[in-house]
Image (spheres, rainbow, N blue to C red):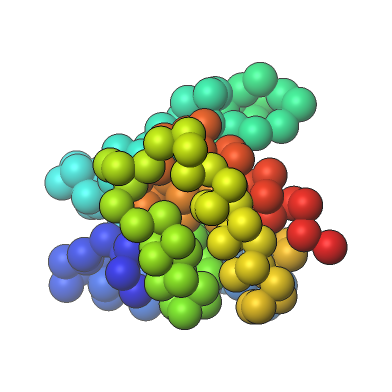
Length: 176
């Protein structure tokens, strides 16, 4: 996976013991893997492996799209979770997956999106129509109408600024 962070051997071993599918995860399994999640998070955080944009996505309220004007992390805190409780909550698993692997989209869709965007350093407001039209075509081709948040994450990872990333997300939401 192109946007996955590189893991050390120890981190890979920890990752192999973590189940991300909440539908198959039992309460006992989650309790057993919670310390492993904390250990993995500490390791990748200590060595600065989590890309800055993913940290902003998680902790900066400006990157949260929704009615609540708080960060994704702030949503956990608002629900009474503090410190390690946030990271050991089962609902944290999708964020951990994003930290580790980036957007959860098919690789061909990611490659097509990268082609539509081109070099993000050269993107200007005049490119928005081309990018949103191309994004909608990708969404239709791969039937990804429900993946607006994943496209938002991908747009950030590709290097688009937040305004463009939100516009991409909105384009995906427009696809019927």
